[in-house]
Length: 85
Image (cartoon, rainbow, N blue to C red; front, side):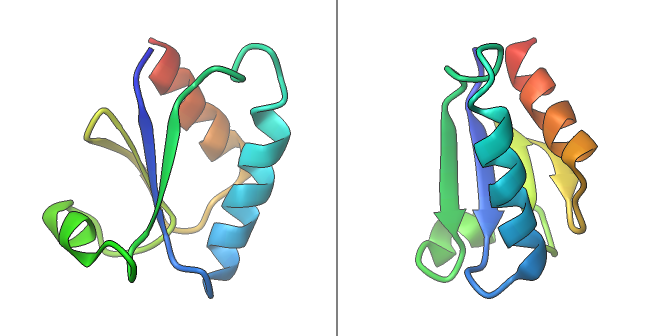
């Protein structure tokens, strides 16, 4: 199983939606064990600056960008499915 990295900002409304979707989906048995590392970009600027993205939330699966920016539940499902493959 691959690790998911989520870059976010605490004040971002799209990030709040991403957290809501992650909370809902990671309760499902299929996604429960996926390791998810949430990185607040202002608290970890060196890590954030080393990655290739411009908008939050941004999801990487093993350092491959899967989603960036405005997010829907289907986008989070796609990220979690990428972690399972």
